[in-house]
Image 1 (cartoon, rainbow, N blue to C red):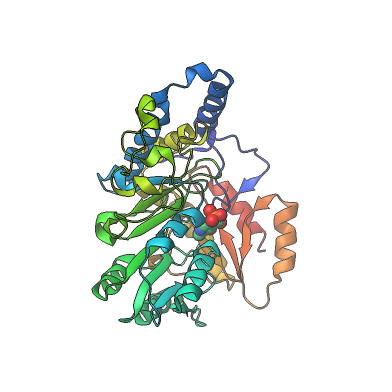
Image 2 (spheres, rainbow, N blue to C red):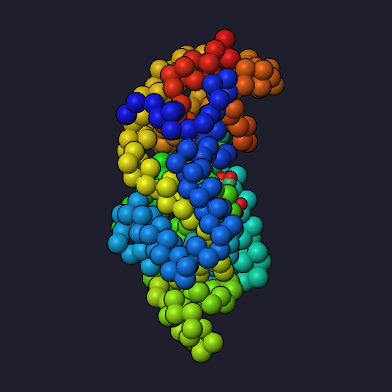
Length: 380
Ligand SMILES: Cc1ncc(COP(=O)(O)O)c(C=O)c1O
């Protein structure tokens, strides 16, 4: 794949290496959003079928990305915390059970479980990051598996760590927690869309993703997949659209006790967001064209030499096997001053993030070799 920069409106003087913060909108996604906005200026153009058809199209596109046909296992959510809250409400946790999470995990995927643990008298089990620089990802994965025992009710983890990109072997975690009767809840916000996620292999009980990063869509819009463990659950709210036959507007006054199938009960009220839905569709169509493998290969080529160079200067970066190519942390040697480095980034309009003690770099297909030459020059 060649650089896809022409599909975006990023200015030439800004080096944007921060998709993990927020993706830029492609021109196509932006146009889809504007068209969605305009529709509301003429509400007679919004037909009853528009409340459902676009969402169904979106769910099918997303199901394909996850390697499943089960589009009805997907629900539109407004945020990751919302999707996680529905999982927490329906998860069986008893006094003395434990909930396994990782150190410095994204807060939405911690607070949800902390409250549940408090309510149920369960233990929050934080798996700390290894101190070792060498083999850090491998050791962290081993520690995660070791933390799961017969009292583990839930493992709530990401696919890659939001702060430094450490990648976890979720198929192994899934096998272990399921063998002990627990659930695997995954926050895929920092990976799905850029890194392959196969629900038929990983078998998560829930997979929640924010839509404004690697899914390339708008803010306040995400997608949640719920497995069979949640088929008979209770949603966070009771909205008309999630009930059976809600497409028939005339019949809405005949109250319907049954939910639609599978995960539909968990979709947020006003799920047919007329601006964000077409944007998310356009984003997913583009991702399907690029493919997650294409994105990984493109970013992999881009970062290979720059990372070698930074490692020669004493920086540490996780081994390829335990990170993706789209998100990684650079840890500085003691003799490098991170404040000075940050000042250089700001001066030269290089946009990366500082998360924990790592400089988080998260490229995409709009980045070029020139962007990385500018980044590495700051380390001189
Ligand atoms: C891993 C991860 N999960 C979730 C979110 C967003 O969570 P929420 O939708 O609850 O604001 C972020 C945002 O940075 C994130 O990095």
